[in-house]
Amino acid sequence: MPSLSRTRLALPLALALAILGGVSGAGAATPPTQPKDGPGGQAYPAASVVKRTLGRAGAVTLAYYGNGPAPAGGRPVVVVLHAWGAVNPQAYGAWIEHLARSGTLVLFPRFQELNRTRPADASGIAAGLIKDALAELAGDQEAKPDTGRVALIGHLAGVPLAANLAAHARETGLPVPKLIFGAMPGGIARDDKSRGIALHDLDAIDPATMIVTVIGDRDARAADIAARRLMREASAVPVDHKLMVRALSDDHGFPALSATLASPAGSSAAYDVGQLKLPAADPKQKPPPFKWSADMALTGEQTVLVAQINGAGTDSLDYLAYWKTFDMAAAAAFAGQNAASLKSNPRFIDMERWSDGWPVRRLSVETPRPPAPPKPAAANATPPAPAKPAARPTPARGH
Image (cartoon, rainbow, N blue to C red; front, side, top):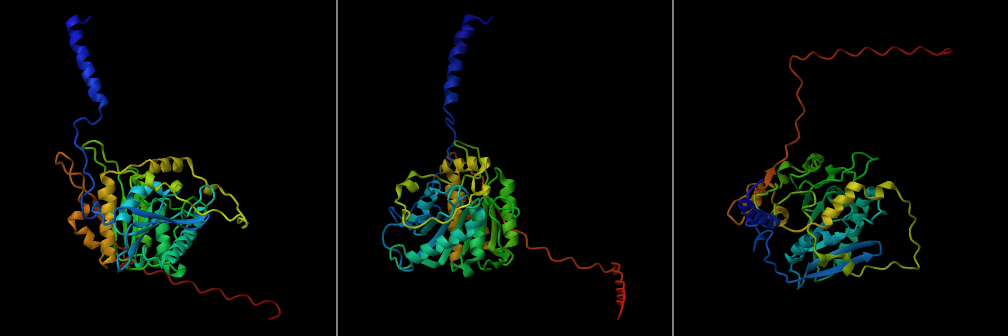
């Protein structure tokens, strides 16, 4: 048995370890905070955000822009397309506030009604909502949308939705976007019978469009496959207008940075849709016929992911991997530059430093490979045998 003196020494030591263990990250390095200025930074020209509801009951778009007069040239338009099931802008409130206070007009079309909208209908619904919202704001001198500078931000299923909108922009009467920014692409239907957003003919995307995708290193395989498919099918867009970015998790300090599928979201209670007065349904108008189908409901996996999205906070990944990269990509796209200008800019991949001076893991950037040219026929290849002449048809009796 241990002696009494050893027991007396062990008890305070165990108590101290328990106390230190209960304080997670005690003394650990802290991640970088939001930059004071520049892309992703907090040097905002607007002190607050104007929040408005546009449209009618069941077809609502939320609009956000900074208080004060709009610039003489108008505000660039950023359309935020939410993940499937994440219909409350509260989930993206921190990013929306950053964009709106930075000077842009942010549109959040609610293209999905939970348990009532089929994925196959989402692209058409979103196009109608955006078109109506821009028409309603066209003469508004405070909102003042500049339809010559439009960017689409998609998250998960919102990414293929953004690609479809860009492909059909001219035929649906929407402004052609200068930038498609896809955060964690996903939710793409494999075929007509599977769940998800089916990709349309992406060859129709304007060649001047810049396409940037950002994925993480957690649960990354599906997002990586989806990003490469988008790049491949948008074949009219040259490779120097495309960029694939990977955000890397980092546990050097506390709290750790985890680049998950939900990490581009950043909840803010100030953007809870429940705080806004939505248009009420007209009691005299008969509702359209409704037929339920299984793909309207969220799967168990989707429900878990939506809960993670709705509960996501903001950290260095938001400020530097998503907000900063979008700000820089939008500035380049609106100025007519290509994605190569981003790749050559060291600021684009920099994630700054932990509080102890250790660098946060930088972003990984890749230009997608151009389509492989068709293989030439081998010089010594055996020529195919000539086809046998077709047998002459036997004349029918009487001819």
